[in-house]
Length: 409
Image 1: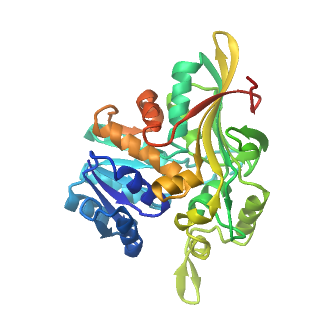
Image 2 (image 1 turned 90 degrees about the vertical axis):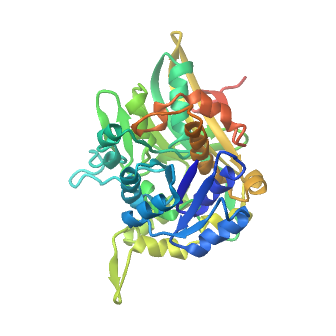
Image 3 (image 1 turned 180 degrees about the vertical axis):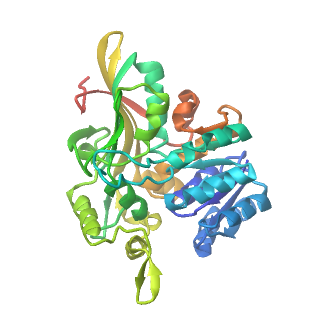
């Protein structure tokens, strides 16, 4: 397989590191606006032939197309902030390459009632073009990170094999990661974090469809496994809520994230000051987006691994019935930062995000997964993916739960 990797930040680097040992990965082009960053990753990989570096502005669709044609790639892997998704998505369609991303095209809040009514939803731009991709016989895989991605695979697995009927599929993300030496240091792209945390969260309910609620609403305490313990989680806008109901029957679908009071307070302050704005403003003759300034002032998550300690857990909490009896499980993956740094040289959050697209590439390359159109993870047989997770160093676990708590054995 030949891949054009658009974006060589923390997750992009992790994708390349995880793919390096796979013989089926013939070529992965490291394309980034910051060429020095791409060269840094190339040096770490130690294989300039298989991982060539190219300069690329991901906002220029024509430039993406030119690089895809130059290297005759089979797949364009989108690993940049989702503000660039439309350009990368359309470039793949135009050149006839497969497409994959980890976060779908952006939403737009309802202009009159943003905290009750959905408007332009995550991925609407892509799903509106699904018929064109089908007609062309091309494949776009959307939402193939850890959440969305792995969590959606787990939802499909639960529906296929563990439940007869599902009351709620609730993706729950939390951990006990600490970054030493910083007062505030997000372990993931602050650009993306601001987008998903400050937009109105989306909830799905059978018979009602998709609707929105207040940011950080419906707080609950969820007990995460493998020693992480109780974490308060809140509603956050996320792709799983838009993806799962398209393929899996459930009465309710939610996503909740363990942010912590301090993190939420910082995000609220950024919003009050207008520093979450992604539109460019005039600052003494220079056009800059306030959100980009915030990102530039914070440490790069890709270089925080040595200062991080602890674990992060991503998973899917499913409640329903099996054989007429109530059933509740949490299917999850825990990544330990020390282990990720030792194995991949990448911190836990970005490494955990990166393994899903590489496994998906593996399954596509070997014909295990196939299809046309715009498809989410739920559209595929979950078993081949889950069987490969341990092989790739990210084994999953299944734990019986009761009311958000680990059920005593």
